[in-house]
Length: 337
Image (cartoon, rainbow, N blue to C red; front, side, top):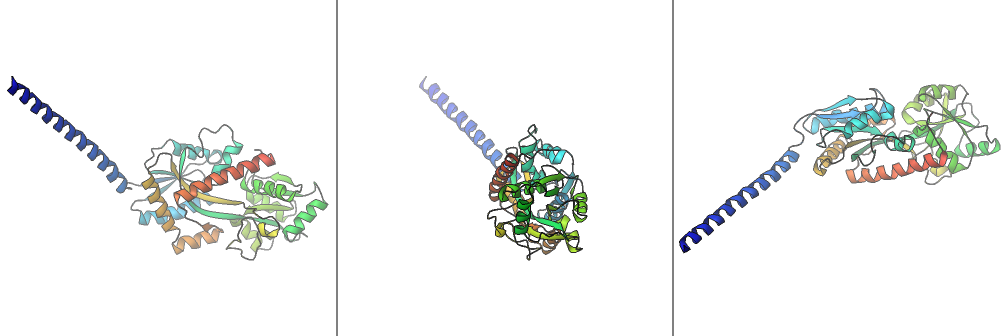
């Protein structure tokens, strides 16, 4: 009887050891498998969804960096243009993709503006994405017709206060960054200006040069040709530091409005839940690309200033920008057409 009990105990311990060893092996193997999967990333091409048509600033800024990343990250980074609904169609596609680093979003500052003007969005622009990196910032420039008596920010404020309700400004469309920059300046300066929305910057700039508008806040890349041709006069830039492309232009902040800071910007996101090590690897690859002289030259030609932030830095920036734009929309009452 004692021998049988002893044998039973031995067999029980043996079974426990086998099962425990097997379980540990499975856990260890599984952990190694996950680690190996992430360390081997990427082992296939990466799809970069751009929610706008080819040829626009978001597409160009994303495409230039993606091409350079393809040379260093070990796989092709392929641009997939999915335009529509102010970038929301392509963005929503990314929220539904697997969080494995193989489907990314390249978008602009409109990504954090949309929630304030589209109350019925089908995704959360902040919570449904993992920030990767801020690619570049592009200052807006305050421009007036070449024959305008306004030659400085001070002139503009004095003119507007002397002519209440008689000053207008154009934009690329309601709730665009250009529109909201104008609304933000109205609030900061305590002046009245009437907003005239257009369908894009080009027709607005044409009317500005022709004298149908009195001023406009526009992106540096689109306004520069008319500035260079002498049809428009640049007054100031909207960022807190002077633009490298136009170091002669003062900032609005240094022209009597400390803290005034408006810019369009371009960035990469991944779906929420993407592993941190993959996100870090993507951010590092993009940052490396942004140091390439050819990439820098292409960005400078657009008036864009390369950044290449860490995921943590970009996450904090997204949060602050979302709050800033939300406050501007609320205070100005800006709405869609």
